[in-house]
Amino acid sequence: MSLYRNFSSKGALVAAWLEDRNAFFWRRWDKAEASRAGDPRGRLEAVLDMVAATASHAKWRGCPFLNTGTEFPEPDHPARTVILTHKRAVRERLQALAAAAGARDPDLLAQQLQLLIDGAYAIGQSLGPGGPAKTVASAGRALIATQVEEGG
Image (tube, rainbow, N blue to C red; front, side):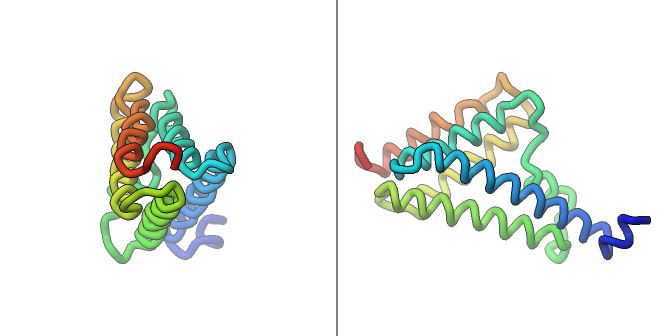
């Protein structure tokens, strides 16, 4: 009964849970970035290292945003707003990091890295620690190298 007192619907409960996952995600992201604070390219690489560690962890069960989006595809579901806000924020942060690192086309690099990240999150759930999710950081570094001059 307390669930119904605190949430107007199942959709509202799911959206609140995603908001919690969102806050947790950004705390991890910020910690990764802070580990390489004085190095713009290094901050981008640290985020990829965090993703690799997450997506190849033995207990990883997939991205809560991707999983929830699959379960609730309706565009007007309350969770969709949280999902879209999160995914757009990821791209914006990646773009800002790419620009700070000196990428020739920060938007393109951000899109490519986001595709790699979501791919790692999806395959990590399926193939686990021994699968290709652990290679997301090295794949991302290869993309970064095509866009950023050495020392950038």
